[in-house]
Amino acid sequence: MSVFTIADLHLSHSTDKPMDVFGARWENHTQRLLQNWQSVVKPTDTVIIPGDISWGMRTEDALADLSFIQSLNGRKIIAKGNHDFWWQTMKKLYEFRDSIGAYSIDFLYNNAYVAEDYIICGTRGWFPESNYSEFDEKIVNRESERLRTSILAGKKLQEQFPNKELLVFLHYPPAYGDVRCLRICDVLHEYQIKRVFYGHLHGAQKSRLVHQIAGATATLVAADYLDFMPLVIE
Image 1 (cartoon, rainbow, N blue to C red):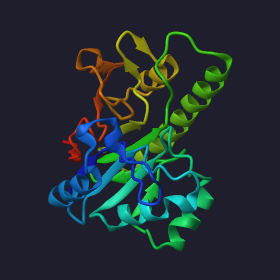
Image 2: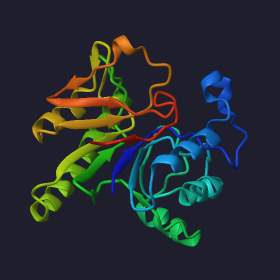
Image 3: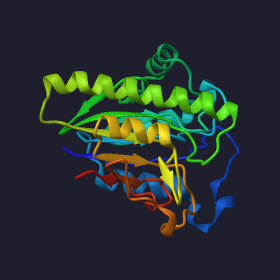
Image 4: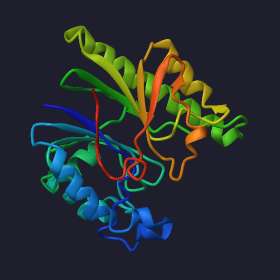
């Protein structure tokens, strides 16, 4: 049994949002994702999807996209991205999930999960910028506290499973080029996180990717960067 990750599925089964407007690499991306996913992920595996799941604006708009994810092999743990406007409270998310029978899906939101040799933590995060507006300050403070809450939940699980590694999944990168999301990095450093996975960046300049940050190895797992092939965590 393995753990995989892939972000930024950008599904649009119920909305008119063709992703190929963003370049040839997005052509027929849903079918390519389906074929790749089913070729490597077994029903007993787990896949972490850190954000930008669906273009649906409301929860009901995301029904077809969540049903598609439900149809894929494995257990899925999904987190919120900047385009996931359909996201609700945990209570409403699970009520909706149960109403459509998408029982292979769980939501990563102020909590943590055990998956094989790992404990899964994370939050959406925020832009890595050198200067934040007052609006940005509120969001990054909130997101850093959500990350802390998730990691503390993971630490609690680690008391039961001391040999399992805490992994952090963010939607936004903790760093890109010369800029850092310092509050997120501070939390990663405080809890000595060793590996963090993130999405959001499309057409990223490889020279600007930051592979080591706050004592952690950082890995970009945006779907187009991975050529729509889920990445196994080893």
